[in-house]
Image (cartoon, rainbow, N blue to C red):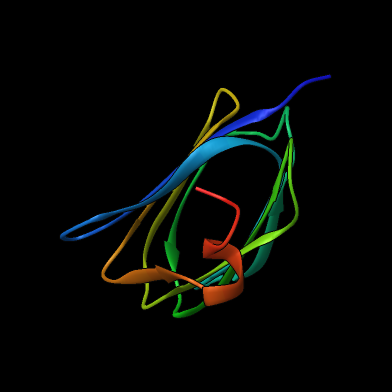
Length: 94
């Protein structure tokens, strides 16, 4: 099964990385959902919630204050001004 390599970093700290099958975010052009095989994208990310469906484990949510969202060759890189894993996500997923 194809998967995405996801990395989320904030301006001053690492947030999360891992393999996923789906990443959802809000960009300045609207909501985006990325699955393996997605065409390359570079977008300005709006403040809001990111959702990641990891290959193993339950869905992860991250609160982000905006930044950049990049997709290329099944790699998703999110660089946020500030971002934090939701508390429920921190229990079993890192």
